[in-house]
Length: 264
Image (cartoon, rainbow, N blue to C red):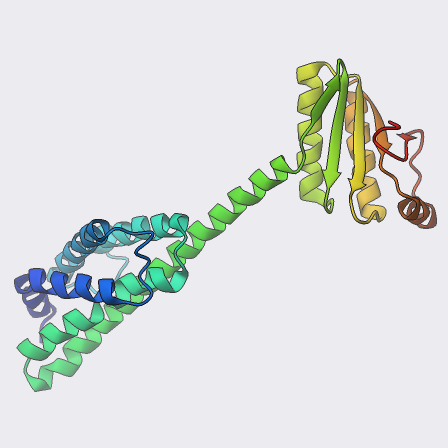
């Protein structure tokens, strides 16, 4: 059976395929009706089905062919929007895979028995490739969203507070690593420039542990602040943390330290 013949069948029964496909998606247990309106689902399905039939008519089986670009763009747009809405990868991939049954039903009705197996296989391979494309774009979008959220959380977890004229406070909560230290340093230096701060209090009461790496990060932050003309005071050094610093042999140099933020 020629590829163009398959396309002619899909073109001829396009409206019927669309109705069956939408009906199947609406009846799926995994459909998130709270996140997606039926009208939006129908429009997405109509747009993709058209973009699927067109390159099939051209006889293209390679998804890298230019004729498949519109279909892949439609799927990419749907995947990105669903990743942002909170859909799971399986729920998103179901959009493509649920199209198999309506297409197979058309092939079963219209194709001779000796051609049915070959036609079904071609359609299945195409939809599997498109499903993988959908999954890959979804994963990339989800990773980008998570990355942005992590950056936002880092910024929220390192607030620089202006206490008095020229006096700033930077309360730290949680573990300090290289990435977070960079955010801490940038936030502090920007605030020093903005407020013309002369004293910066770095409070580590909320830092659970202090090891050599954390101590080095603190010293780098202090050194950077000094280059901007501000003196630093480290507060919140609890007894166990003080012992740890001594045992590690970390030299805080001439950095002023206080037990609590109030002392600082």
